[in-house]
Length: 197
Image (cartoon, rainbow, N blue to C red; front, side):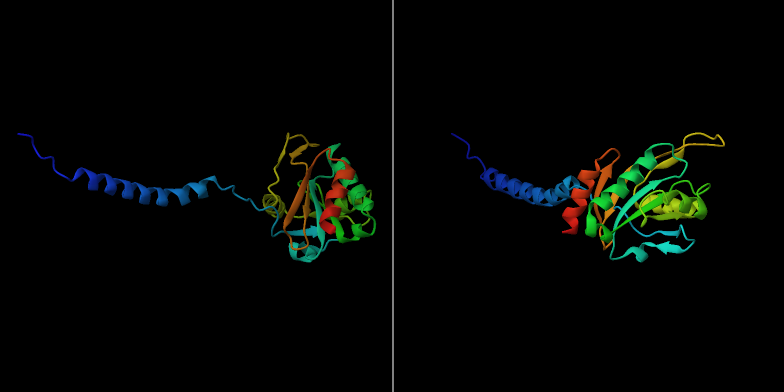
């Protein structure tokens, strides 16, 4: 005489399948969030002193395209090349270049006084704005742009390691593009022109 098997296996399978389905629905959105590329903002609030001794904040540059570089006036090679590249790229834009303000922000506020900054940028584009400030103000500005800097040594004539990138910012203060050290004047001006159009 054969035994009659209880008929609860099939409903149990369906129940497990339904529970697994709900579990997947709960897990999938979390997985998408984890895989989603995190956008790190570049730029933001700052308070510095310009090469004329005037207090400046990011609000003073609203409505202007900015080409921003962090460096220092004692920099032996990288910074002068970057500022020369910026000057030529802005000039290459012709009339549209008037919409772009080149900005130099020091990462060496101990030595880069208002007077020193003013003297330094006078060798480059006539519309260059130089900015300095206290060490705390400088650190805040660098942090907003994700810029690294640190003294390379403790000598009297110390060098400063720093990020060497040009940041192209829109008139609303939003990041548009960046250019690494060694990028050609032609490529920088073409990319800026594309946004200015």
